[in-house]
Image: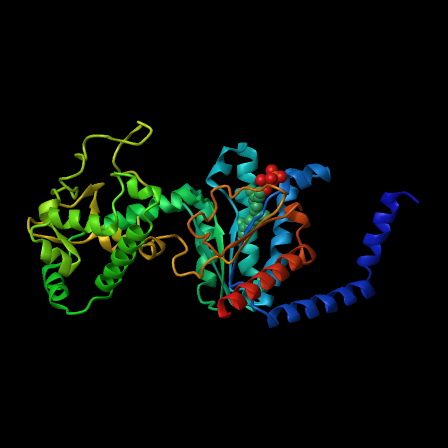
Length: 407
Ligand SMILES: CC(C)=CCC/C(C)=C/CC/C(C)=C/COP(=O)(O)OP(=O)(O)O
């Protein structure tokens, strides 16, 4: 008997009703056992290898993507059943627009059909109380697809426990750029006089305390770590030195320090600091490349940032306006402007198909504890049996880390 016959026979045996029953019991048992241990709250997937799967199995590329969606539905079930609350999937990268029009159109049509499927007969999302969120650049989505996307988001918005983040069309660099843009916008908005006065007279301010601690820790670190090379880099300043320089820009250094705000003496009416290059002049990057300062025609502004711009222009502030100090910008500030603001940190990121790259996916969200796993399986073949070892390893590593923290 040839190996092809053996493989067919094995497939037939596994899909027979008794084998299916045994398998489903085993599946429940294993998932139940998994739930007993620590479970990642947030799992992300780069669903790679649909086209290679199609080629390998001599089927249409689109059919490869369809089978990829089937695999996704099964994996979502495993995730939510095991106790994962947030799943983020890379459904369409901005880079994917470079594919043939035929494939891009097919992927967009598939998104439409599958999103409808997920929410309409989608007891999957209802069963686990999962809501869909779309992370990415809406303005790149065609109106007919956008309509379905918005409908899917709306129809599931009442679900509470779990989240399915569909990155579509997405790249991390765009996300980070838009978060920085929104942060700059937020910090370029004058604080109303009465709020500023109230802030100034408040005896204890969390941001100020946090900032003082940060400055203190950093200056301690730099003074003890005298061998560290960055100490000798003249262009780098510790937060304490940058506080000094910021204070020196303001009208009243002690007031700056006390209020954690900067005054408009440093800001031109167009919102630019007078210590920086004029906004009309292009700035130079370290590579010497000229860059125009950001103004208009940029994508994904938040409602707040939209409100503060009129026809792409920054509103003129009044001459004595007060601004929040840029010193108050922390990693949390940027996180609060990311597309997935408020989500728990990504605990586990899985990429299939044997490719070991992040491909501009969740670069900000991957932190020191994110476990990144590259698997040698094509996405349509990815199932519980390939995912379980990953989850077990995650549990093992997490327990080990928790134990060493306690010791
Ligand atoms: C709800 C919703 C919209 C679901 C999306 C479903 C889904 C599976 C999308 C994946 C699309 C994609 C570009 C996969 C990467 O494989 P590839 O085409 O890059 O394959 P290759 O690596 O073999 O070339």
